[in-house]
Length: 116
Image 1 (cartoon, rainbow, N blue to C red):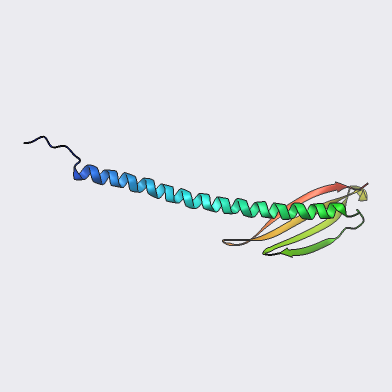
Image 2 (cartoon, one colour):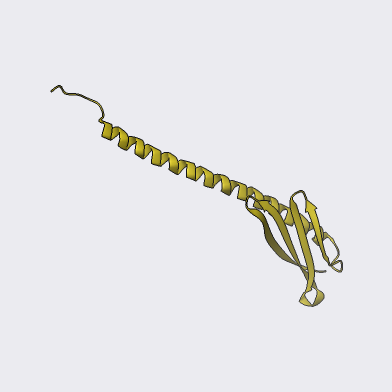
Protein backbone atom coordinates (compact mmCIF):
# COMPACT_ATOMS: atom_id res chain seq x y z
CA UNK A 1 0.00 0.00 0.00
CA UNK A 2 1.03 3.51 -0.68
CA UNK A 3 1.52 5.94 2.18
CA UNK A 4 -1.48 8.26 1.87
CA UNK A 5 -1.71 11.56 3.64
CA UNK A 6 -4.92 13.36 4.56
CA UNK A 7 -7.92 13.04 6.80
CA UNK A 8 -10.34 10.18 7.08
CA UNK A 9 -14.07 10.75 6.79
CA UNK A 10 -14.46 10.07 10.55
CA UNK A 11 -11.94 12.78 11.42
CA UNK A 12 -13.72 15.25 9.16
CA UNK A 13 -17.12 14.44 10.73
CA UNK A 14 -15.73 14.90 14.23
CA UNK A 15 -14.18 18.25 13.23
CA UNK A 16 -17.47 19.42 11.70
CA UNK A 17 -19.37 18.45 14.86
CA UNK A 18 -16.92 20.32 17.10
CA UNK A 19 -17.19 23.37 14.85
CA UNK A 20 -21.01 23.19 14.87
CA UNK A 21 -21.12 23.06 18.68
CA UNK A 22 -18.80 26.06 18.89
CA UNK A 23 -20.87 28.10 16.44
CA UNK A 24 -24.10 27.27 18.32
CA UNK A 25 -22.46 28.46 21.52
CA UNK A 26 -21.51 31.75 19.88
CA UNK A 27 -25.03 32.28 18.52
CA UNK A 28 -26.53 31.67 21.97
CA UNK A 29 -24.09 34.07 23.57
CA UNK A 30 -24.77 36.74 20.95
CA UNK A 31 -28.51 36.57 21.69
CA UNK A 32 -27.88 36.88 25.42
CA UNK A 33 -25.56 39.85 24.97
CA UNK A 34 -28.11 41.59 22.73
CA UNK A 35 -30.82 41.22 25.40
CA UNK A 36 -28.47 42.47 28.11
CA UNK A 37 -27.56 45.56 26.07
CA UNK A 38 -31.23 46.36 25.47
CA UNK A 39 -31.98 45.92 29.18
CA UNK A 40 -29.09 48.23 30.08
CA UNK A 41 -30.28 50.89 27.66
CA UNK A 42 -33.82 50.69 29.03
CA UNK A 43 -32.62 50.94 32.63
CA UNK A 44 -30.38 53.89 31.77
CA UNK A 45 -33.34 55.73 30.25
CA UNK A 46 -35.58 54.87 33.22
CA UNK A 47 -33.04 56.03 35.80
CA UNK A 48 -32.44 59.26 33.86
CA UNK A 49 -36.18 60.01 33.86
CA UNK A 50 -36.38 59.30 37.60
CA UNK A 51 -33.34 61.49 38.28
CA UNK A 52 -34.88 64.36 36.30
CA UNK A 53 -38.12 64.06 38.31
CA UNK A 54 -36.15 64.06 41.60
CA UNK A 55 -34.39 67.26 40.59
CA UNK A 56 -37.66 68.95 39.62
CA UNK A 57 -39.24 68.00 42.96
CA UNK A 58 -36.15 69.03 44.95
CA UNK A 59 -36.31 72.48 43.33
CA UNK A 60 -39.83 73.01 44.71
CA UNK A 61 -40.38 74.38 48.17
CA UNK A 62 -40.95 71.77 50.84
CA UNK A 63 -44.60 72.62 51.58
CA UNK A 64 -45.39 71.92 47.91
CA UNK A 65 -45.87 68.19 48.41
CA UNK A 66 -48.07 65.96 46.33
CA UNK A 67 -48.34 63.24 43.77
CA UNK A 68 -48.44 63.24 40.02
CA UNK A 69 -48.07 61.40 36.75
CA UNK A 70 -46.30 62.30 33.55
CA UNK A 71 -46.00 60.44 30.25
CA UNK A 72 -42.93 60.80 28.04
CA UNK A 73 -43.27 58.72 24.93
CA UNK A 74 -43.65 55.09 26.00
CA UNK A 75 -42.60 55.86 29.60
CA UNK A 76 -44.98 56.69 32.45
CA UNK A 77 -43.52 58.47 35.48
CA UNK A 78 -45.46 58.42 38.76
CA UNK A 79 -44.31 60.20 41.90
CA UNK A 80 -45.45 60.67 45.45
CA UNK A 81 -44.07 63.07 48.03
CA UNK A 82 -44.67 62.57 51.73
CA UNK A 83 -43.60 64.20 54.99
CA UNK A 84 -41.02 62.63 57.26
CA UNK A 85 -38.98 63.57 60.33
CA UNK A 86 -41.84 65.46 61.93
CA UNK A 87 -42.39 67.66 58.89
CA UNK A 88 -38.74 68.72 58.66
CA UNK A 89 -38.15 66.56 55.61
CA UNK A 90 -39.86 64.68 52.89
CA UNK A 91 -39.62 61.35 51.14
CA UNK A 92 -39.87 61.30 47.36
CA UNK A 93 -40.81 58.07 45.60
CA UNK A 94 -40.69 57.80 41.81
CA UNK A 95 -41.88 54.85 39.73
CA UNK A 96 -41.16 54.60 36.02
CA UNK A 97 -43.12 52.15 33.87
CA UNK A 98 -41.43 51.21 30.62
CA UNK A 99 -42.06 48.79 27.75
CA UNK A 100 -39.98 45.63 27.44
CA UNK A 101 -40.00 42.79 24.97
CA UNK A 102 -42.32 40.86 27.30
CA UNK A 103 -44.69 43.63 28.35
CA UNK A 104 -44.37 46.50 30.80
CA UNK A 105 -41.93 46.82 33.70
CA UNK A 106 -42.03 49.21 36.64
CA UNK A 107 -38.84 50.37 38.35
CA UNK A 108 -39.05 52.23 41.66
CA UNK A 109 -36.67 54.82 43.09
CA UNK A 110 -36.82 56.84 46.30
CA UNK A 111 -34.90 59.51 48.15
CA UNK A 112 -35.24 61.73 51.21
CA UNK A 113 -34.77 65.48 51.46
CA UNK A 114 -34.32 67.66 54.50
CA UNK A 115 -36.34 70.88 54.36
CA UNK A 116 -34.60 74.09 55.42
